[in-house]
Image (tube, rainbow, N blue to C red; front, side, top):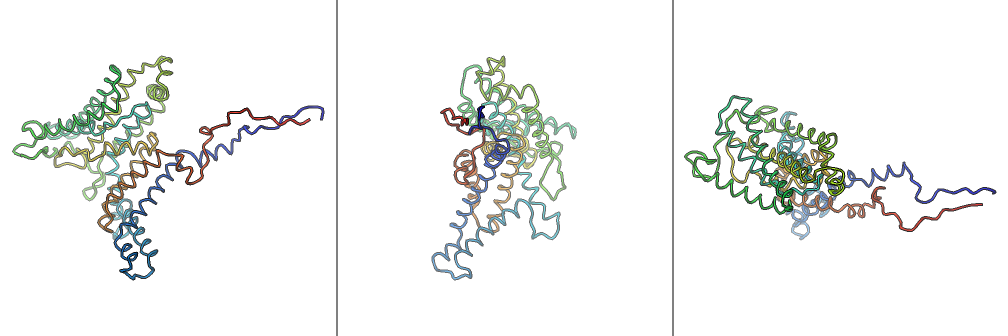
Length: 413
């Protein structure tokens, strides 16, 4: 041939292949498979701790089917109880009764989603907010005090109590951002310390008459919230789901708009990607840190508000956070710090919480196994290469490690 024709090199992009690679090896697939792997680990633990399985394995029981059947019955019974306790109970006589577990899941998910959104905002901005407990307690104290000590008209009372909680959580989180911006203090250390400050401060307030302690009581507990300051029930008195869930749905939409459509959200993401480049581009990084922690603390504080004005209406103690501040880190990680992902992850963990109690009551499975499943989800989410290696998934195009040598072009004459 008189001319030269260059064939495509091995680095020529293949759009259809790249799309398939992104789907199969992307973050969504990694999250789904991480959950599946965690459930497999949970199934193994259920089988090992089941009394019937142990009896068959030891030869003290001669049940039909032997050991495989005993293992299957233990695992299917446990996860069946988990489903019935979190999604739908087929043993109930009507739909209204059968759907009650789903409402319990949404109730448990409400504070998890709110706190997860707050942690996710920090993650997207390069800040690791592990002070959820302190921010929740600060918000709970403020919202609770307004809830029982300020008799206001219906409607206005609830709004004022919610705003008081959001403001307290924002201030508690904003203090972290202010210290980081002015002194360079690391947010991890500061948030850990403020967790203890909030806990012991709330304990003092709950033990001091005239502050948060109920009148005439010696218990470290607040009085009951006034009816005008409690989130109204969404589906009637037979269900525990309250209007706080709708507030969390609105918060999810607001955070999505903030991160993906607003100028402030663009600054958050720019600082999270590269603070130095953001500074060169004209973004005030220090001021951004303060804004991030104000919003993050306010969202986490919303979880404390939901606890006080929603599921707890008879007063609360210093344990009102119920570990949600730390569970929110898991929710944010599983949701990949995306608002929609955090919402779905919050519902998943709400289902694990709601179904875990049912699994323990119906099958005698320790509720701690649910905690193990949650921990394994975090482990697999934090190690995508491990999940890809187990399932032999391809690495997405954007994450591929290309050869350092220059590819050869094949030339024909």
